[in-house]
Every structure is written in structure tokens, then in C-alpha cells.
Length: 196
Image 1 (spheres, rainbow, N blue to C red):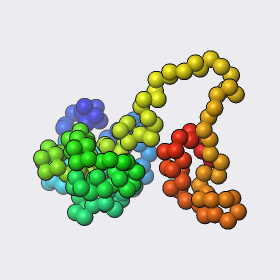
Image 2 (tube, rainbow, N blue to C red; image 1 turned 135 degrees about the vertical axis):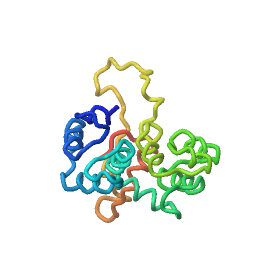
Image 3 (cartoon, one colour; image 1 turned 60 degrees about the horizontal axis):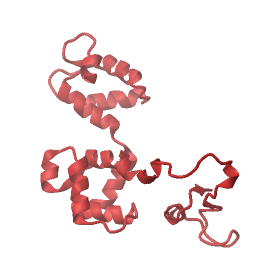
Image 4 (cartoon, rainbow, N blue to C red; image 1 turned 90 degrees about the vertical axis):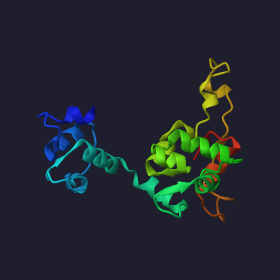
């Protein structure tokens, strides 16, 4: 649908100007040089200077790839193009700090988020599935059970107790201890909801 809307002249191909207009419409702010580079990488057929639907799909994947998530996936992958179920479980335990990660849970994640049927059958997760998983509510730090308010919320704010943390990043006292980002995960898992 996006491809058809961007194809202003209806020839079934997108030129670079149509791509620029589409990105502007989608509020994607990439440097023109970068867009042109990705356009040229995706333009692999004989009709140079235009993208077919298939080439546009490749261009779109390149454009939407998050480098931070790609590098994170690569840190846990031996194969560099996907995570095995074991590598994904390792990521969930070590990076996401999940406890009791079972092979069944990992298989469920792959089945739900992996976009490639071939990868699903092999029990592995590629970068698209990994990105989809990491952007999903499943990876949200917020507990979905807390969406529902189950207490009286009509009182003044000072009547409520809020577990908070001061100097969260410190591993000990304020003068002699070291700073660690891991402390944020620890205090959130301990119940703090207001961190500094």
C-alpha cells in the first residue's frame, strides 16, 4: 500500500524523488546522502534509477534497521545473521535479566516474532524478528498487570507511598563507591518506581 501511494506516475517503479517524498510524508528524517546510498544498494536490476516493489522492500528493511539492536544481536550470535534458540535464551537471561527462561518460552518467542518461515522451522531468529521482539510490549519494562488501577486514586499525592531511589547509579556510599548502570535494573526489579 505504501509503495502504491508513493508511485505517483503509476508505472510500478519508484524513482529517488518519489522516495524522498515518501520519506518526508512518513516523517523519516534521514540525510539525502544516506537515502541515496541505500537506494543505490537496493537498486540491483537492469532498470537503474528506479526501485521495483521487491527492491523497495529491501530498501525499506535497510532503512528501518536499528544499528543498536543489530549490534546487540551480534554480541550474542556466533553466526552473525541469526540467533539460535540457545543464544536467544542466553540473551534473555544475561541481557534482559529474565529468570527461568525455558526452551518452550524461547520457541514461543521465535514463533510469535520471527517473520521468516524458514527461520521459524529452523528455530532461529533473524534481525527482523529480533527487532520486532525488542520493540514489542513483551520487552516493555512496564508490567502489563499494572495497567489496571486497583486502588483508590482519589487522595492527594502526599498520601501515597512511592518507592524511590536516590543516587541510583551508585554501588555504595556517595563518596567512595563506583557508578554502574546495572544498578538501575536492580532497583527497578526490587520495586522502586522513581529513580534518579
